[in-house]
Length: 96
Image 1 (cartoon, rainbow, N blue to C red):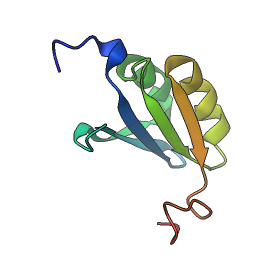
Image 2 (cartoon, rainbow, N blue to C red; image 1 turned 135 degrees about the vertical axis):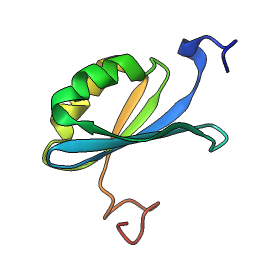
Image 3 (cartoon, rainbow, N blue to C red; image 1 turned 60 degrees about the vertical axis):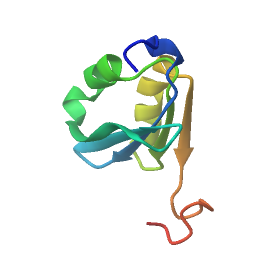
Image 4 (cartoon, helix red, strand yellow; image 1 turned 30 degrees about the vertical axis):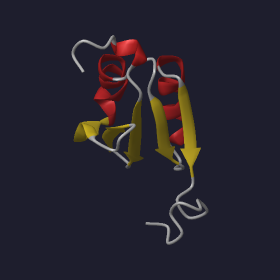
C-alpha cells in the first residue's frame, strides 16, 4: 500500500458518535482493517479527521444529535459521507 498514492486508496470508514467522543475504524475494499478502532475525544475530532482521512474515503456516521455537525467537518475532506440510522438500516436489522 505504500506505493499507492493516498488519493486513490479506497477505504470505508465508520464513526460511532458518543456524547464526548467518537470511535473511528476503517476497512479496505477487501474487508481488511486499515484503521484500527480508535477513540477520539470531540475536542480533538476536527484535527484528527484532517490528519487521518483521505480524499478517496467513503465515510458513514451514525445518526445522532451530533451527526450533522460531524458531517459538516467530514464532508469537505472525503469522497462521500453517509448518515445512517442503525434502527432503520436494512444492513443492521436488529439495530446493533
